[in-house]
Length: 440
Image (cartoon, rainbow, N blue to C red; front, side, top):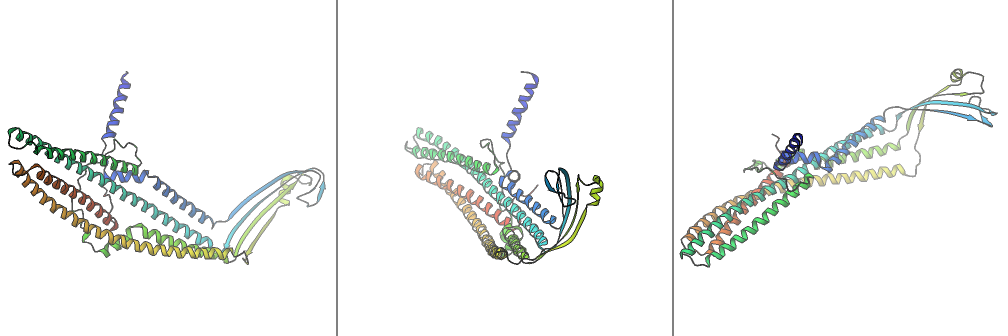
């Protein structure tokens, strides 16, 4: 193997090891998802379409300009485009024209179309922001689930290590004749149960990692891992804010109501736009044309200047009857406006309900976490007392095993309520306008 190949191989291995050892932070996960999520990319395309709609609406204020030219060879009895007379001979001819038109009045439809395009872009912008927020919340939930499973695994391994040490000590006491041989069976059963729980939790870690990878559109599940962040409590004093204050903040920061409001504005503009079809339109036009024919005794340039002409004028179009098409469009637009108004009211009600629900969830999650902590402290004391009694032969292995299981369950409950409290707090912070991920 040449020196260059060895260096390349070492660099490749080093890169792979670096990729495998990378531990993703919550901020990195959110940033990566926002940059690579397919739904977000599609929403960004919708925003670009809004720019195109706005450009077309601006173009409606500009005059039109069209040009055309025609060259032909005529045989037999044909009309000479210069003399407008039949000629029964072969001749060549050409005509050219340029026309320009400008909409002077159409019921302000151009202006209303431009305003609608601007409102539509605002609505699409809100939809894009909401999609980013929803993905960030989903990632935060998955991320915290992995952290919970990891801490759960640490607790289970620590307890299993203690159980194995107790088995070893019990075997020594049995051999010394201090304990009956049957005392070790319960401990061995506890050890087997704990090992089974460890396997289950390891699988839960893998499943939760796969779930997060799927949100991130990452395929290397086995090498994916997150940083072992330590999230301390309490997070913020958000629960000290009143529900009314949080609701007012939510109206400013959460996009659901803003989207519904923007859709309602678009629907109102659609009604005004459809009503423009009831009004007459006035168009100004300017045209120029010229022609040439081979049989006319003038040269090409002279004919173009001699037989040219211009047209300037106004065109008035008054709608009288079109099979109720305009009336149907107006009625349909009114119905859509009414529907949008209902959706706006529903979005406001949903936001109010969600804020109050999130507030109560935080209060209850905090209470559950504090209760779990108290239970854990009591279970810990009970476990230590049981351990002392068991070591001196005043408690059998079954009762000691029950005390151990109760202590393990209390530890698991503290972890569960802790991460539930964290996530509930994150949601309430989101409603209050606090970013899910604080930029460094």
